[in-house]
Image 1 (cartoon, rainbow, N blue to C red):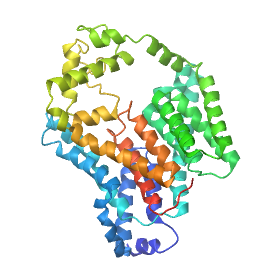
Image 2: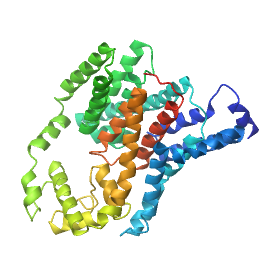
Image 3: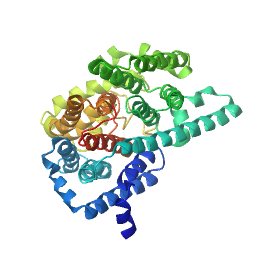
Image 4: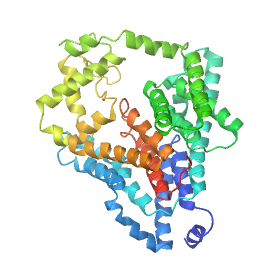
Length: 422
């Protein structure tokens, strides 16, 4: 213990090494990430013992950017009181704990030094590159035996590392933002070499909204901030177009386009017998929004506090059965349990308008702070997450919550120091 305390007095900022390890272990087994989180909390506590004056920072309860996240987590926990499916709610509560704990951890953490940003993001980028190479090597070995090129795309590619394709895509996209906006690497050859690989994986994993969010967040930042480095922006867009052009010929992306063309929007929104509705594409998403309106019309009081964490699935499954979409007992053959691919809708149904306010207020507050202080990295990352939430339930699993909370709380802490790497 004394050794750890003395380490805090050295030039090594152990706390931010632990923050980097939390991000670094995200693509790997949950056990590693849990150990890293515990280490981060311990480092934060030791830092307070070593610097008692920092306890004054616990007054962050008046700091809306911290308190919004805490209140969001608390509301999720309290939803057990009004949940219509308490068992499902209790099983999911542990995932939301970081929303409550992490703001306290970062509030009492040491000041961020300039090199801490490069350290934290550098460790994360390194782990993403390791996973990318691992997935590529395994897919190549599989292809060399079975000659099936689908192993290089989407879930078949990400499953090599036991990851969902959406998360692998988001990890690569976040790394791109760190490099392009956060200026993690000064060496141009190294920077563009890494960017090419990261861009390749963004398109191989084929998450439409992640790609859209990545492009939009950078372009919006460029437009509003009138970036002087037009060359970097042009190269960024050209690289996207080149990779998109190559990727547009792949079987997976062609399938995505056909999925959109063949979607039966009218059937999903109007018909009462949907036994013939395709459940693998956009049509089922259209029906889900139809079900959302019906659920709220039938339970108007629930609009304020929701049905409880994860409990809204009961109502959605009822709609699947009512319209004859789900008609088998095997969850893997039907759509029972298939949730909305929208974090805002999921939060609304879980904790209502009351809880949704805290999520939206948190995002607006940090986007506003980033804009006022010209913190480009905070701006693009907060816009990136705000857009991803439109089609992904990123805060419903541990990896999503840890990435979201750790990155944005770290950037808030960095912003408090009055400097940025813009």
